[in-house]
Amino acid sequence: MSASRKRINCWAALACLVVPMFASYFFDDMFSTLSHLFENPSLLELGWNSADYGLYTSGYSVLCVFGGLVVCGMLLDKWGVRVTGSIFVGMMAGGAALVAWAITAGLSPKTSLTIAYIGCMLFGLGSEIAGVAVTRSIAKWFKDGPMALAMGLQLAIARLGTAFALVISPKLVAVKGAGEIYSLSETARPAFLGMALMAVGMVLWALFVAMDARFDRKNGEAGDHGTSEEPFRFSDVLALLRNRRYIMIALLCVFFYSSIVSFKKFASAILIPRFGIPPEAASWMVSMLPFATVIFAPLFGMLVDKVGKGTRWMLIGAVLALTSHVILAFAPQGTAAFGYLSMAFLGFAYSLVPAAMWPAVPKLVPEKVLGTAFSLIYWIQNLGLMLFKMLSGKIFAANPSDAVRGSFCVEVMFVAVCVVALMLTVMLKNSESKSCK
Image (cartoon, rainbow, N blue to C red):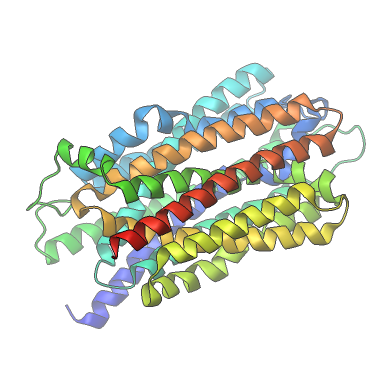
């Protein structure tokens, strides 16, 4: 196969891989710019309050945290991306369908929340393992090419799904007049759009599976995972846990992503009272995060490919994330300009850290345990996400008549999370400097 043909095939495979992730990110963030609605459950036929919403969003991480990610990551290395990825892309779509049904079935608030929570658990584990399969596939297809750029592009397009959700959801669930009730079908409109996107993603995933099987045949690989010379062994997992730099990256991931992903879940509930803006303005403000990554994640990926020095970019990103949350917590009340400034800083951070962090993992661990390595990181990450989503919901529920105080308390929590992330990047950089001596 000619070099030009191989490059075309690599980019075509990437195009198939990004669409399921686009759909996953959309569905996960479909309520982020509607979170303020749950502060007044009497106006929702669904009947959920902020604590209910926080519990629902935390469901994403439950199966991931309680062993699902680690076990399934091992299965990914044992069975390969085609078999394992297909199972969990299907689980992702099935969980999303269960959530959509729970929202529209006309059940009591408690029953609908329970069923949606179960759906979110299935969706979360499916999404995370599908994400590991996608990342592992990119590492395989771009092993001798611009891996950081490819991962940056995948990240950018996936987060475009978040941006789409943040902007389109308030338009699908339009603002009503005082005292008007949001019906079940109105509340579920973003979920139905997410299901349509997921259907397209499943078709393209099936196309990738066919391409990947052909790739292995042409390259003489014995199986799906492409590690016939070095079979997966459980002892390799124990070796991962002794890799100090790998553990630091995993811990950085949990605190850095918690400061952004958990924030997004309550974005409108934080931004509207802090800066005195309408819901539509809040949706555009927070959409700066994923839109920034669409532009800058590929650029920073190319920078990492060309220059290296990944820990330096992680350190800069951690400083920017901390600065953003300090502004959100302590900037003058009602001044929208500070909200836009904080989102700009957070958007840069959201591009810089992942662009340097994810391509570093394949350099630290053997390819035969790459799926397990990414899954362990995602497992630790989801532990933090589950905790901070639940805490955010409880803080808002504890301040039902003072949204300003609730948003301030949540932001103080995120400032503390960013301080820990910054400390970890400093430790990682010092560790890299010592290893180079």
